[in-house]
Length: 309
View (cartoon, rainbow, N blue to C red):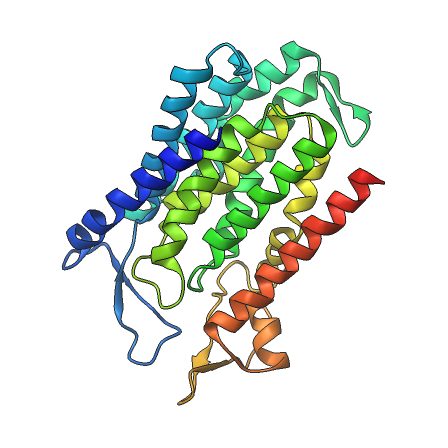
């Protein structure tokens, strides 16, 4: 698993510089709205994360085929690839929100079928029976779109994915349920490499191709490891972001207005956790990101403590 993470890291790190150069001067760029002058930054960097992830997966299949939890693993790969494809479609064509909900759901149906066939039909201690066929795809879809909502600041989404992945590793080793780590380690390697280019000041943006993919992969890993509850708890900041976004009918963005010192100010209705931080105290963009990372890190520690106790 460590070798797969390293392979994912190297592949992502090698592919990103070429991808950044190729995207410059095309329509696949976006304004960095939290910077003075709003410079244009290449988007769709998530493509490198997806590529790196599957390089790591390929190494795992080659070296540890007998240890991989067969049907669970391959059904998960279909689900997370489906989320990545939907994200890429949105990056390129700006598809409707209903399609970003429907298509990942459809691609996760095989995983729901495998979970049902395994007999693991309980959620939060309640046996839902056949409803697991709907609950699992719905969980993958919600996780993917939730991860996509809490984005918009340099390094935010990638860093949250790294922290959540490390949290899953710690929980897995504490409970002895390590099946999901065959997904987590390749994801972790790819996200760390991407973060080197996406951290403040960002050289590339992730796009929906990364955020949808990472959210789906983390949810799938929790499902494979029979840790649905812990996986859901890791998404608490994203769930809070969802309800804040509801206030603005999902039109709000996680941006502020930079002053001459680079601190972000926000005046208006609170429609994001980032807005809440900016209104409490104007901060530089990397400081806002650090606060949100710290929130997720504290949540991971609290979940791990509950597991150990």
